[in-house]
Image (cartoon, rainbow, N blue to C red; front, side, top):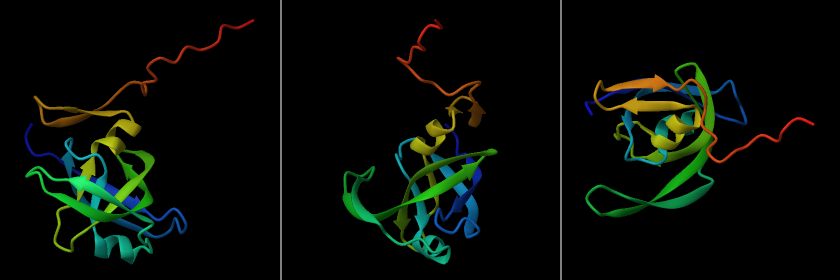
Amino acid sequence: MGVTYITVTIRNPSEPERVWEGEFLIDTGAVDTLVPRQHLESIGLVPEDRRTYGLADGQELVMDIAGAKIEFMDESTWGTVIFGAENVEPLLGVTALESVGVEVDPHNASLNKLPASRLRGFRPKPSP
């Protein structure tokens, strides 16, 4: 897939008026969303926990994380944001994409909204 960027808004769930918007690289190899620390701190987010992440080169890093509202393509979801280094490129991870029913088309380097979010294995109860 070619390089695809998208405008993403990160919103503080405790203070919804506090937001940061930026251009994020779509990274289907990343589970969570990575944001430079100073931008998360500027909207009042503080680390809630730490998680170990594996990098493409095999290195493992323990990084600060928090929960935030992630908004893009007229959709929103709640997700984990990683406090990245000051100069890190923001990355939108696959969990946020899948949560709002967006799939990556690797042939056209584009994002497509699915007609409905998938609920595999869900079977509605028959009406009485």
